[in-house]
Structures are given as C-alpha cells and as structure tokens.
Length: 211
Image (tube, rainbow, N blue to C red):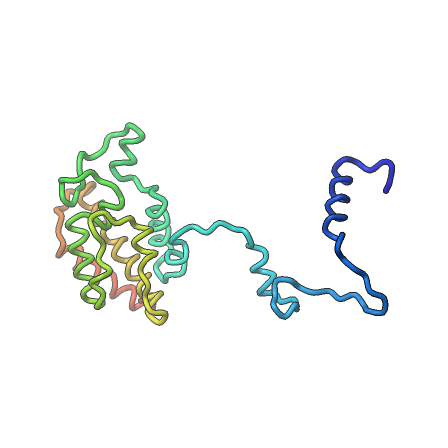
C-alpha cells in the first residue's frame, strides 16, 4: 500500500480484502469471466438492461397505465389520477382555494378522485354497465374503492389484458370529461350521456387500432 493512500482509498482496500478473503487461487486453472445476471453465466444485452434497473422502486399501476394503448393525453391523466394530482374539490380545499361543496355527479359526498371515478353512484352505474358488457360484473368498483388498488387487483387474461387496460382508461377519461362538462359548462349529470360518449369514443379508438 502507498503511504500516501487517502482515507477513502484505504476503506475501499479493506472492503476489497474482505470480499476476496475466501478466494482460493488454483494453479493450472485459467481465470474465467462470468456474468452473474444470467443463469448461464453468459452476458446478454437483455440481462444487462435488467441489471441497470436493479433496486428500482416500482409505482403501483404504472404497468397498467403506460402499457395500455390509450392516447398519451389519457395515459397522462390516469397517471396524475393514480398519484392523486388532479384538481378535484379535496385538493382545492387543501390549498384553501374555491371549490365545489360536493361531488358534481351526486351532489352528496365530498368530491375526491376515488369517489368521482369509482365510488359515486353515477360512476358505479357506468362501471356496472361496462363490466356486464365485458362479462366481468365482479370487476365493478365499490363505494370505497381506491383507484390504484382496484385496478391492480384486476386480473384479465393475457390475450385481453391490454384491451382491458385501454378500455378502463377510456371509461375513466370519459367520466373525467363528463365531470368537467358539469363543472365548467353547466351540463347535467347523466349515466346515459356518459355511456353514449364512451361508445362514440370507443369507435374512434377502434378505428385507430387502439381497441
């Protein structure tokens, strides 16, 4: 060791000694380089990419949101909704801003994203109709459903997975647009209106190859 070795270098040297303490070198056997990220011990670009993200923290719902086929605007909205970053009454209230006193759909419960998109009586009627059409009435959210928890517990079959995620994104997006129509344009809450607009938008998405 160099007498001029700094404290950090000394710590690294000690750590190296600890790592190699039990390594035995055997004469007549060539050294070999192995890749620990593959069971075959052979390097691959795929495993290198996987190793690059080792230790990352995954956000619940990210797979469902970003791997669906919905337009980017809709995906971004759902991402904000999953993070509770949309300007509903509860968020406005926390910032001491003017806000509606109750949910614009039912005019009874306080407006939160989970209530608006899942738990409100209007939203649940929409979901019940959609899920019955899909043959999955058990997927209909309850009054106290949480968006991320509800979505991530659904388990569509593999061949239907992206279509289901895209369809769910479509319904959430249209519920949000209906809410904005009520708040900003004076529209009236209507289950039938939401369902009609979902079907019209679904036709556009099918024409674009999204559904």
